[in-house]
Length: 297
Length: 218
Picture (cartoon, each protein chain N blue to C red):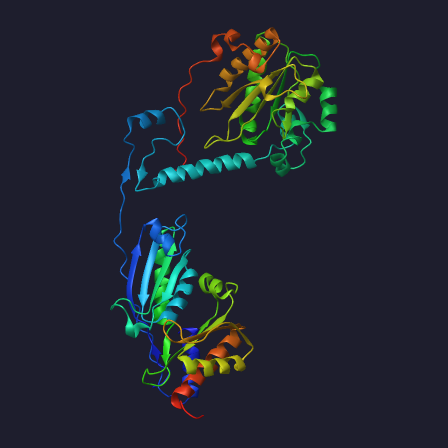
């Protein structure tokens, strides 16, 4: 019985009414509106279907009524979760030394600060600069830096493999490779400072890239000639999507070594580097990426 | 038999799953946020206002339109018009369904006028809302969750009743609407602690019953 009905029933009693208050009527259900069931409508456009075979982007996914199909939505949410997890992961401090790298840190003090302050992730802290000065080989051709970037997951999965492949590929071309360095909370431009300290001709940073949908494990590589603080993105050449479903680490290593050799030969990098003189194996055909099914709906 | 509940009669319930934006805008909604509407008419306007407020507690809906009709249900424009049209709006038809269910339950089991003279010649609406929803709290300028006594009676009965209610407990008048209103009743919204609101509502109902029993020369 509702609050007001209880109050009024008590008032009735006190006013001398002996009969109980009439009960509230039974609730008659309101008939629900006729249910409208929408059947999934698959993509009809041949163009969209063809485009979907060449990308993991959400094209040619059909619709149900005016909405996405459930499996599409669940897959999207699962892929977004993978990306969130990758951005949220941290590279353990001991990872570098455990895998044979010289471990260095940037001026960032926490993961949150790392995400909010890209400028701090581009500079070594004083202790790390001293470590690089003391422990790393100087005046080499190629200084390779492995870093967490925006996906520590990717760094931990393929960072070591890619580093070793790149180092082998560079040495095969007769380039001297510096002491392997692994940086924590690092941004791309950190390669400038490390390369400047080791006086390398070419600096290369291999770091976890900002995750896309379903790819939390992608690495990017940025290569720069004459590394020095103050270089811009226009001075760099890069390869992205280095992961199992994208560019295989072995292929990427060949291309990166070709970049390094061409930079030393042409004495420049970035937009002024003549890619036409790079040779044939740097731009091979890559099969379209296939979307991984994360959810069974 | 005095103070017998007079259950409101729900006269029509319809939905518009995807209403025209011009219609939504002209009824006070926001076409950017609202697509689905629920429409209800009923023969007791004040019970409907309370039920609309109750519905806002059960689903993410907005009460975009609720107006009493002139001269009340006895002089309605049609057999489905009643005394009020309430319009609720939401982005999702499922929210409208949940809100309608709560609204109709409130009309059937909670909010209603009471017979103050045993002949339905004088009726009183001494309703206590323990926890205000989004709609009436906005109308009253109170915070959602506060208690409120929603008191309605015919003109003179309401005047005597309101005086008794204000003196019965530590309550504050949020809004007093003297007669005539659309339906020619008089209305008052009081707030205070829940106990105070209850005491005020009981004193209001008792005063209306008293006037109905002895209308002259007391």
